[in-house]
Image 1 (spheres, helix red, strand yellow):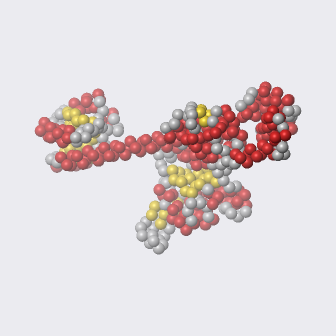
Image 2 (tube, helix red, strand yellow):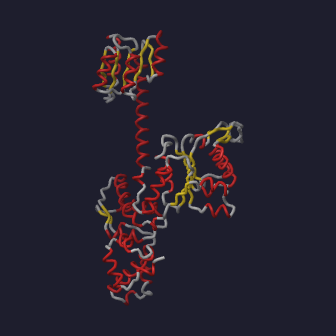
Image 3 (tube, rainbow, N blue to C red):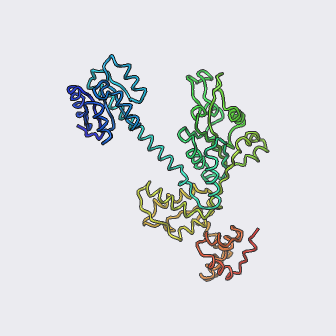
Length: 465
């Protein structure tokens, strides 16, 4: 016999029937308790909740119907199966209307009892899995996973909070790898639509011939191969959010149809005449300049204005370098869990390499590099050797070019001084002469930075706008 941790309370005033049901369920390995009437069952449940109650309908003191009503009032999540004689089926159906999971007609066979109990627990497991998945999604797409303390990211947090509970269309722009889909998910999962579907449509992934049926669906016989009716993404996403990724690649013919849907909140399936009303929020993302594209005729101007109600522009990673240490820490924690590693931190030298890199692939590239570093690290600290920056050899050649190929003609101290001066000059240029911003990124205090500027005769004012 397999031991099963599921707890079942059987409520029946007939001792023979009660014993028979208990015997069947005991054989299945369930932990079975018994009660002879509704009042006794209610008392038991208040002391120790059960995974399932199987109750007779007609009993003294408190019948099954009254027991169900009271349990649902106090414990809305309770699962109860009602047992009834043939003549009371109508009452059992009424019980299902107020929350009974199912009913059984007496006499109940052992096989029927096993099957209906199995179905209940399969349903419960599905609910638990869905709840766990929903929790995982909420955690994954919560603000905690949009990492950044920079001014630009704080502004984006404020925008998300402002727009999440509206139905306004949102246009998210930014370079590849800046996290546009993560922002779209965050808007959805912090809105009143979070319990409805979030549907992603990649405008580059499907050919134009398939995109229309993907979005709007089709009727049976609408074209060759349409052997049955198909529901489109918009219909499926009703009450939820549709996210268009790479919107700049949406064909012009589909732009017209999307514009009509946004204006009228309705569409027809391909080959159909019935107008289908939908309630969806549209969020779009692109790494292209849709305004410029519309002026050049590559994107409908009216659709651009319809999408650009709430614009959110994500900065590239090299414009928010102060967020790199936070992001690295976040990714180390993430991949520690994924790979069962125990990386404690990253060395300052390794972090300096990351801080000085230009990150053309943005946050996505940083995450991939950190993931590799977590895997390859041989100690509890990520060191320079674990950081594989692309074209590292070329970057070393670049250092040689600072000395016109004559690096060996200079002392080591001269070489370091030249590198330090070049680094500080580049830093001040990037941050427009702002001392405290430059000091924060470099990891040295402002007084030290001032001292080094004086040493190398660097004037911050030449970098200001």
